[in-house]
Image (cartoon, one colour):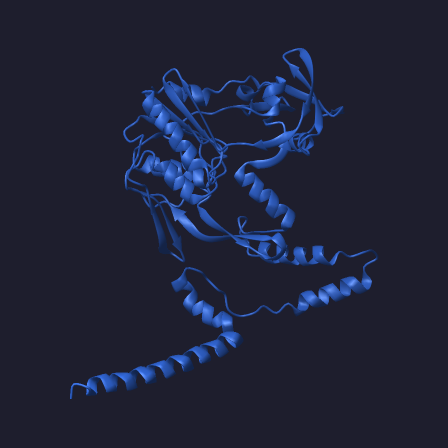
Amino acid sequence: MAGEPRQTQKVVSRKLYLFTIVVVLLIGFVAGTRSNEILSVVGPALGFKVATGDIDLSSVENTYRQLKANYDGTLDTQKLIDGASRGLVAAAGDQYTVFMDAEEAEAFDKDLSGQIGGGIGAEIGIRDDQPTIIRVISGNPAEKAGVKAGDRIVAINDQSTDGWTADKAAKSIRGEPGTTVKLIVFRGNEEKDFAITRETVNNPSVDSRIDNSVGILTISRFDDNTAELARRAADDFKAKNVKGVVLDLRGNGGGYINAARDVAGLWLKDKIVVTERAAGAVTDELRSGSTPVLDGMKTVVLVDSSSASASEIVAGALQDHKAATLLGEKTFGKGSVQKVVNLADGKKLKVTIARWYTPNGKNITKDGIAPDKKVELTAEDANAGRDPQLDAAKGQF
């Protein structure tokens, strides 16, 4: 009697084993023929999505054949393929869902990481219709050569910059490390010439300083290093007993949502920073950690019309939880979350996967976040090198 259960158990085990083999073989066969359908079912449980079905591209093929048959010129097949992908993605009608070819994808990665290649380490803007040095990044060639913020660039490599955009000037200054770029600038009424050897420039996302016992924390983007750099600055502010903090998010177009959560966590203890919703349902909730080094610290957040996405997540969370006062101008209004998908041959797809909401349940798409105190920075202020927004923020302490 004692042996019967064991014998029965062996028989059942053999049957289960054989059944498992059959199921595995069946799944192997089906997966080989209908893998997308299988993945669409099990994918969500494993944390990824898979689309099913195909799209009829016969009309695209016909367009290509007619183009090839009739076009008077040479066609680059790869450019045509990339163009078709670009058009397909653009037709989704979402400005944040974009196809990037290999070159664009590489530039995207470098821009987000701050690795911009060879350059001189200076930010350029337009003042009085002239490309102008807005900021010199510490430890880079521009600073070593003696270039200063406010220098108006009148020529680059002997080419006049009249009518140039800031982007055109920046691209002309960039180049291979070890090569030289020539600048002619005006500092006041004095003309100065510089021959600067380009170096590989790393532009950190965080800059901090203490001004009259007020900590100034400037975040230009939210990348992989932002949270750590911001926490170091916050620890330094705390150790030096600052009387308040100005968090400057002006011109910050965003970045990684997790970095935004961690920066907000410098002020917030175990609180909702942002929720994500897809198809109207909450898909994720990001909460701050338990070590808010600046908890209770009087804080003013500077925002403007270029503060977007991750910047708005931080600003919205601190405003909703009444941890800071927002000062400046209404933010950009980007309340969506994008995922970057790697495609073949170094290409990428940046696609909107969800909408994000502030702790109080507001999606700020198009509307932006209104500051608690509106202070404008006019073109006249910028041309004169004045910053009434920062002045007003420091005046709060």
